[in-house]
Amino acid sequence: MNTMEKKRKNIKNKIMWNKTKQYFVDMWKYVWSKTTVDEKAIATVKEIKKRYKLTTDELRDVAKAIKEVGNQVGDIDNALRGEERKGRKNEIK
Image (cartoon, rainbow, N blue to C red):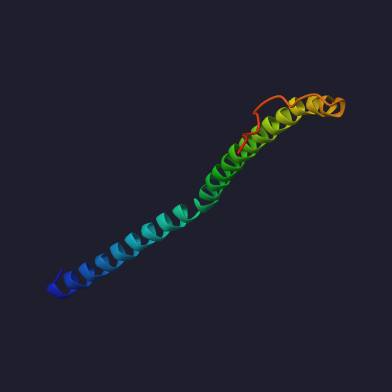
């Protein structure tokens, strides 16, 4: 082999190596680009958990309000009978 053939072979090897490297880089990017489905699923789960927490907090508030209304329903018939109001007294100014 003379020097010219060695240079050509060396150049061919470099070109082949660069193409192989680029192929693996492209494949790596392709594989990781498919993870967007996973990322979307994770984001959806986070959103569901957030909405669940907000919904349970709101239902807890509604239950508390209903309980308070239930406690005050008994005061209506007392008021109709003319009884004094229970609870805080009105301040005299």
